[in-house]
Figure 1 (cartoon, helix red, strand yellow):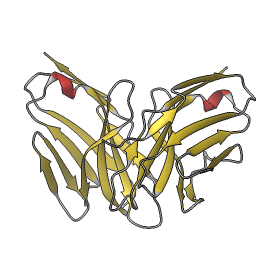
Figure 2 (cartoon, chains in turn yellow, brown):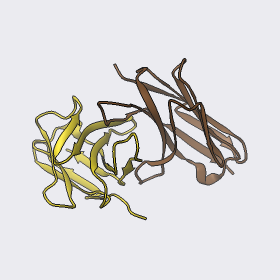
Figure 3 (tube, chains in turn cyan, brown):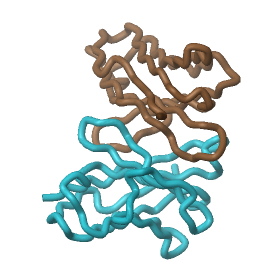
Figure 4 (cartoon, helix red, strand yellow):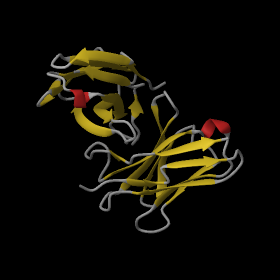
Length: 115
Length: 113
C-alpha cells in the first residue's frame, strides 16, 4: 500500500539552528501539507502546497518556516532558526485532489526536540 | 475563530462494549468531518468520514453521526476489541477556500481485555 514517508524520525537540535524535515508524498498525489502536534496537544495545520506554491498557511507558519518541493518526489519543511517552542511532532500529509474529494494520508511524523 | 472540541480526553471500556466519542465544531461553514486513529509511534490514519449532506455513515463496527443544527458529530465503535486501543481525533474542514483540517484535542481509548 502506498504511504507517505518522513525523515528523520527524530531530530534533536540546539536553539537557533536550522532544521530540514523531509517527506516523500504518495507518488500520484497533488496536494501536500505539513501539520504539527505539540506533546499532548491537538494536531495543528501549518501549510498546504499545490502546483509548486503555498496555497494556504496558518498563523503558526511565520517567516522562520519555509517549504519546497526541490524535485519530483521530496517535500521539505525548513525551520531557519529553531526556538524551544518548535519542539513538536511534525506530520507531512498528501492527497490526490482537494480534501473534498480525497483522503488525507499522513506520514508517521518527525519528532523535533529543540534544546 | 475556528475550533473543534472533543470529549472525553480518555475513555476506558471493557472488550465487547461500545465506545462513543463526541465532537463539537464552531464554524457553521464546515462540511467535511473525518475521524483519524493514531496508534503509538504512527501517523493518523483515516477510519471514517462524513459529509454535511449525510446524517449517519456506518462501516462495519464503526459509525459516525452528524447533527448540523447542533454542530455535533460523534464516533461510535461497537463490539470493541483490544486493537481498537489508540488515540482518536475528529476534524472539521470547510468546503471551499481552504484545505486545512481543524482537529479536536484527541481521545485516548483503552479497551480492556
